[in-house]
Image (cartoon, rainbow, N blue to C red; front, side):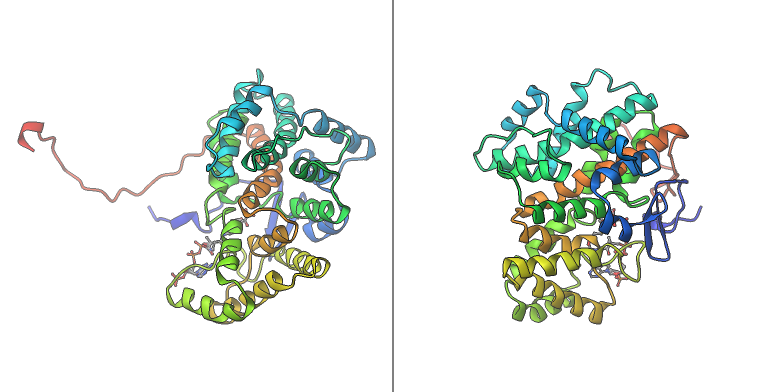
Length: 370
Ligand SMILES: CC(=O)SCCNC(=O)CCNC(=O)[C@H](O)C(C)(C)COP(=O)(O)OP(=O)(O)OC[C@H]1O[C@@H](n2cnc3c(N)ncnc32)[C@H](O)[C@@H]1OP(=O)(O)O
Ligand SMILES: O=C([O-])CC(=O)C(=O)O
């Protein structure tokens, strides 16, 4: 047996959802550059789930369903208030999504129809959970969703309790589009492994959230912000990054298992960060990020991934850093659930092998002789 450590380069399954070919990312064959500029996130969710862009009637219907299903079961809302205050919102989100499964009487109905309904319900409820966790953490009452708002608009509304401004809504909407799906990344793989045992969608999404939380995956965006705050100002960048690299520390938000010549999503987030640095009049975070990019590219040949400029972008939007990875999850649940649907449609248990490297020919020794 030959081992591909980290499964690098292993093609584990076929998928018709998103592709990365020669550094170009597409959802259902549509370049994400196009989607980021022209679509809204509701269209992208529909595209991922159904395989084609919605017509106006389908889009209106999806918006209606998302609005109707955004409220949480009262018991789940009460649970959120009982979680320890210092819990990371990704841990709380993982637990809350798992709890949602217990309040869905169809949780174990794995028909296509029931799973499509659950995909919409999960996508509708995750922003409500994240916004409620944020407000509870601030000692505030959660704000109930407003079904008349669009998806990104409703999320920002539930965070702050007031009608959000258009710039913030469009920025969040675009970020959600850019994070929606990404072929067989670690959290999507986790969701598919869980699904392939014929377990339920809530279990698969719980696995995926736990996997996204890690700093080598979605958890990197929060660490990027921590690094920017730790460095403090553009004139400290060179010293701090050189020290980290000399110390063999990884620079969060750089490098990628698949993209070796740059992540196509990063340019959109870089531009969003630049624009927000101008509109807020606060250049510091964007300038620091640019300097870090220049240094890491020249010293290590590593380019920023999707997590790098999302950090300064969210910061400019007034979002606290503990919510960065939960916002990633709010977007990626669209891709995860699309992959769960695809896995059920043509399932086979996912069970690779391990090369055994432990001791051999050992005998049992009774406890009194050990
Ligand atoms: C949404 C996402 O999940 S995007 C990725 C988010 N994660 C991060 O930003 C964390 C920082 N980046 C990393 O840890 C990695 O680049 C990963 C996890 C994204 C990819 O990992 P892999 O494909 O396994 O690459 P691996 O970790 O083996 O790195 C290869 C070499 O590049 C170096 N390297 C990779 N990324 C970085 C980095 N960010 N900073 C410094 N060095 C790095 C490694 O130290 C290694 O060097 P070596 O060969 O001298 O030991
Ligand atoms: O594909 C990966 O390995 C990680 C990534 O960029 C993502 O999940 O968006």
